Image (cartoon, rainbow over all chains, first blue to last red; front, side):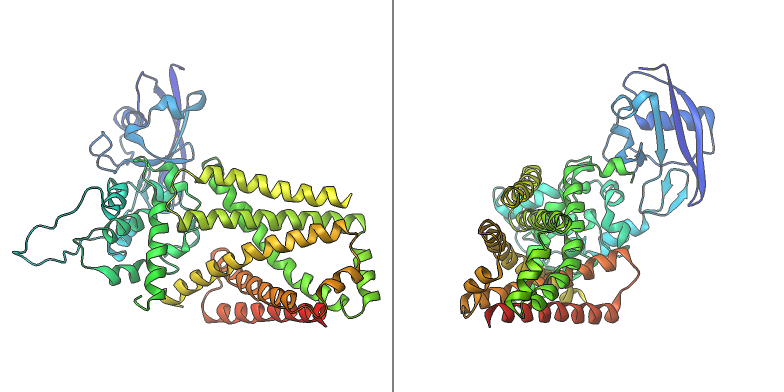
Length: 238
Length: 113
Length: 112
């Protein structure tokens, strides 16, 4: 490994430019370590976002050498070819400043996709019994570990071409709830995720699944929604 | 997202499907119109068929057959992704699509020359 | 077009895809066979003239292809251009009908 990393970092908002910094290379260094070094020693006004540093909170995603990644668990030696790093904010979201983007659209679409659990049972009713091996529980489990980092959303060309598209994360969330037998939102959620802004806009390019740091497969979840909404339409229940 | 980030088999499969679909959609009206006109008499039809055996036209036809085979296999791949609960199949499916379309083109090629 | 309409377009696109998958295989096989026989008008017309099965096949094939092409073009146009809304839907519907009509004309030409 080279002793010095040559790092270009986006400075500015929607309009801006790359600024160059030299950062000492270290063993087991993450991309987030590099950004933090720049902010503490070279450029105190650099804006970026992080919280947990251990891959749980989903706040530190950036574009690293052209690919959206969680920076806290991305080792420099895995992604910096020739000791060079180019750091930009996530794509498909408005830039606030430097490496921080406005996630309002991203989370707004979660609520538009009915991403909130709507309990079917009232207070005082008995516990729901969910068989761990049931297909529905398995389908929900496959998508439940999303940390909301926005990597899939930044990687999706359908989001870029169709700004109304709810995106992989929101649709993945909706699919986990469609498979939750305790949820009572049913047809209303299917209506919210159907059509051109929803699951039917997806072309199965699968960049979301390729770059998801949690190795989830939003394409498979969206395919599930396509089938469920089509079935509802065929039965006149959409 | 930069182009290197899009450089993966499923994205290439998407591009191939879109480009082949667009070209086929443009070709389809020409194909129907030419066939419908040529067919009005056996002599005229034969003249049309002779025209299609000119080398450049023939090359274009091989291209069309490859496009059709690619769009067919790519479409079967999409139906599999959407309707079957397969997960790790996709890469194999991409390879099969490419292979099958190439094979179709070659079959046509071998029969023509 | 609302979410329900878009869902139906998706269903129609997959249904025509399934029809076309079988039809294109038959078409490719016929094509290779015809080329091997030395591609002549007489041979093609001998196969199709007065044959109701081939007429039905080509009518179904042309209709499915026209619908599939129309819906596909609509998707591409909506993603690649600012053209949306009812004017696009009507234009695509007319185009699909024109393609289908040209296909039916060719199919009846082969039959009669």
